[in-house]
Length: 186
Figure 1 (cartoon, one colour):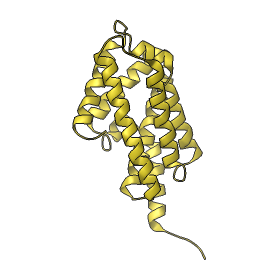
Figure 2 (tube, rainbow, N blue to C red; figure 1 turned 180 degrees about the vertical axis):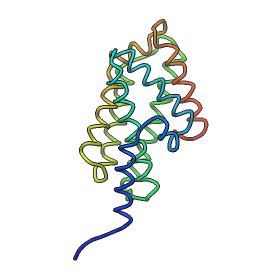
Figure 3 (cartoon, helix red, strand yellow; figure 1 turned 120 degrees about the horizontal axis):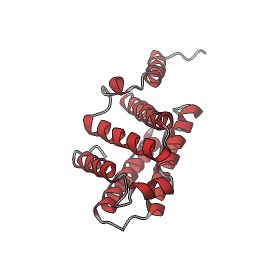
Figure 4 (cartoon, helix red, strand yellow; figure 1 turned 45 degrees about the vertical axis):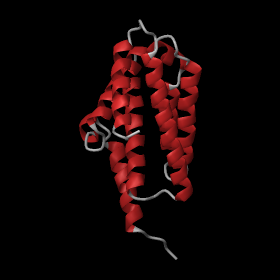
């Protein structure tokens, strides 16, 4: 018997459309101002670190696409009970990562790139587990691309250098993360 679901077809179409329109102006419908500011700072850090504008844009574009697709899956109740447990674990790990990032920022010379890198890698692994049955291998590659980029110990070390060029970016990122935690977003 043919299995046809207009709901599945609509979700698939939404994901496809969103993957094509991940530009700054169109994404503002889905991402709040604080998150948008954090993404802008992450872009500046990536561009400054890599020296490659197109690579920095690709990392942020991949991050936005993944965030929007996962949000779409949540809104359409696509996760089963086990996956919702994984999502809860992911949110806790993300919250822990944000708290750790802020703590390392606030207390100079406490930064440990191994700790931060491990937290980001754990977040990546949980996210991959969460979307395993829902997103394509191309989306899985996007998740790997984003997390591998930002968990690079060398990038993290430069980002957290108290007298480094990325200090103003880190300040804005941490203020944004603090606001998102206060709002209960992460």
